[in-house]
Image (tube, rainbow, N blue to C red; front, side, top):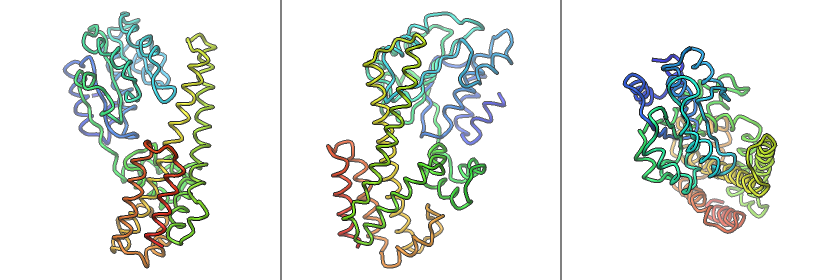
Length: 367
């Protein structure tokens, strides 16, 4: 078994067993790595691809080394990442479907990795179907997804599934040990991240800390009867700024690619940049609401005498103060109200109105 593959799947026993067995018996033509964000799918895919490309190479160690680099200079490793909210259809056709017809530049195999496969449009998935059904013998495809239900059944059924479980809070704490934060802050981020290492790191960064403060401000306003000050506006502004930053960064990348010769129209660049901005804006807003729900969940735990299961461990004194006159039933109901708003945000014409309605409702029921 590859030491790199062993390391990349250290906390994913089922995935490690599946991939090790695949290398021993000969890898299949297509795999679907499915599991939550931050569970290690990307690192495992790179290690697995490196082992596939090393097999039959003139210099296996060198082939493995180049495949493990990110970005990789290995000519037989194609790694596709969505530049915006979705993969471009033409990019999927050009870099995967058409490229799969060419024999390996070196060695015996080619590997195509599609990151965030849930971002493939139906048109892209349908176009990819033939490659999955009748791939050349030397082609191996690896699709990564945190939302397997977003894939067409015809796509998923033609791939060998490899499951990744959410990382435990204990594992996340160990991984976050080098971060510039207190032990209590690391423990809180690990518990609030729901098994997602990338989210845990975000929570310990400047933007994540700000979103936590915004969420706590919203909850405090609902508890104290000060919702008229519109505390949710800070959260909306934070999400808007994050979206604008993502849009600008995506536009810069796409424009550089266009200059280097990759076919991109001005319309494509504008559309993809806007989609990336909307996606990031939605992610930050959703995170803020999830943190609100987690705070109410912690209030319910403290009101029920279960301080040991609190997520926001670096805010225990404040939570205890707020929970003093709050029963666990009302706190749990508040958490569910927040989650209901989260689930319905994509159906609301106005996010601001949805948040306004939520926090005035919470104020009436809690203050």
